[in-house]
Length: 230
Image (cartoon, rainbow, N blue to C red; front, side, top):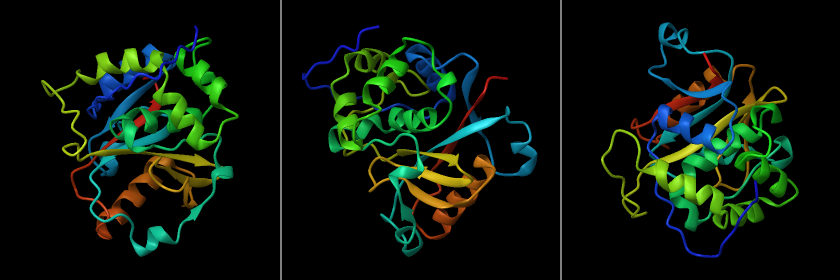
């Protein structure tokens, strides 16, 4: 599949935090059907026990209040800790959902990808690029644009605004690499090393609870999982 690109401006419509829409979207661009996006309905152990396993990554939709707490400022930033990281510039403000998904998927096994798909071709073509260059490549990628536009209008809302000043939510991803929980947010300086972790789900929940307590984010949040399909 050719990686077609264009310099034409494209106002990336935001995606709603809907696991069914995300699953269909990601499988359309090349996520293997052996994987899907699930929803975390609550942080109680009784609810967590029903989630499909294994879980490979976490995608959180949140509303930021304060940019960073003192705790967050002390976290290590190290691009070498992950396989893949990309920046998110202002022109991709509304594309934070797909960027979070790319972070979660590309920092897991390549076997998640369908051969010669949009996802695989994008990974191969940008693997040697810098985080800033990867951002530019996504901005110009027509394969992503054409699919994204159709899926952005799906979900529970009849319409989602593309006015960046009215889009309050933001997507970030969490993965475990080499025994450490990593936060992947393209608007930050790089991947944040949270700390030692063996369970990406519970580690992410602990970090989200810390951010709530520190006043970094509001309680208007949702959490999705990148998991093996049930």
